[in-house]
Structures are given as C-alpha cells and as structure tokens.
Image (spheres, helix red, strand yellow):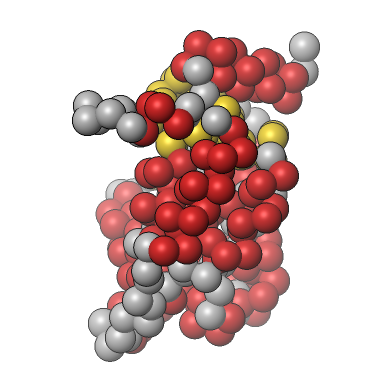
Amino acid sequence: MSVKENILKKLSDIEKAENIKILHAIESGSRAWGFASPDSDYDVRFIYVRPRNDYLHLEKTRDVIEWELNDTYDVNGWDITKTLRLLHNSNPNAFEWLNSPIVYRSDDIMKEIITELYGYFSCSSGICHYINMARANCYYLKAGDFRLKKYFYVIRPILACKWILEKNTPPPVVFQELIDSVAESYIKEAIAELIRIKSETPETGNGEHIPVLDSYIESTIPEIRKYADTLPIDKTANWSALNGIFLKILDRFS
C-alpha cells in the first residue's frame, strides 16, 4: 500500500469511528511547503462536519480530532465550526489548510465556498502572525550548532509578510512560489542551496550559520515589525455569510 493509499484509508477509518464527514484533507508542514527531509513525517490535516443533531445540544462537543501522532504520521482535524470561526478571525493557519498544494480529499462543496472564505483574510492580521512567527523562531538560530530546518521557519514567514504587503492576498503555501515572487535576488542562491541540503539531510541534521541569511533576517524582521505596528485593522468580518455556509454544509451532509 502506498503512503497516499494508507492516508486515504486512515481518513475513511476516522469517518467511521467518529461518525463524521471529512470535507477537506490536505498535507501541511514541510512536505506541502516544498522542503521536506528524507525522513519528514506526513502532517495530514482535515476539516470535518458532524451530523446536524450533534450541534443541537447544550453539552459542548469537542471540535478537534487528534487521530495519530508518531514518527511517520501526524493526523488531526478541525470541526467545520472551529474552521469557520478561525477564518472569521483571519487565522493564517486556516488559510494555509485551504491553500495546500497536496490535497488528499476535497468535497465539491469546498470549491463552492472557497472564494467566499478568502474574503475573510486580513492583511494586518496575516503580517502580524507571520512576523511574530519569524521572531519566535529566531531563538533557535542563536546556538552555534542548530537544526538547519530552523532557517526555513524564519525565512518563510518573512517572505509571507512580503507577499501580503505586495499582493494583499493570503500567501502561497509552496515556499518556491514565495522565493520566485518576493525574495531579494541576493539571498536566492543561499536559499536554493539550503533547500538542496535539507532534501538530503535528516530532520535532526545540524548545520553552520549562513552569514547572508543571518544578515538578511537581522535587518528585515525589525523593518517589517515596525511597519506591522502601524497597520490599521483592515477587515470588519461579519458572521452572516459564515452562518450561511455552515447551514449549507449541514443541509448537504445531514
């Protein structure tokens, strides 16, 4: 059985065991970003809906399913209610789930609603999220020897910020798209070499500092952070459209 076949079987097993319908199932993390190591695990994420009656009682139903976590598979999902609430708040992770280039399963209803969901993206929220991610991951670059993959967890969110500033849309999940579109030319060679090394190095592989990337990170993060602090909130999201989407999904699958 191939990896994809195994993942599809897991998704079917989840539906039966949890009495749910999976609407959208994708790959997240380094495999979706395009810089997986030979031993990278599979970060499978899914959005699901429960039967209508499960939403009509006072007891709170858990809105996350954590199915599997081991060295090969990390499989978990969000209830559609959690997903829509996160999109209402312009959660960048939710948009990345919608934009993943590796889709294991997706119901036709996702194609019907996805354009409307993109309308909830907030540039100011997105920039704050990604630049804070870059700043937090800088901590792991301060050691003399560190895992090479940590560079990606700083560079990728920086480029995501640049994409948002230029395009005013959710950034693409694929790292190479960010590089081709918004990365400065003088760092592209260093990033390309880093991707090559990462593709041949285990997840735990350590490396040495790359001066051109260190300098880029040191100068760019404060610049974006300063700009992000001046951005006004650019979305006043309402619930009516999302409530309509939720009811549409319930009508389809209940």
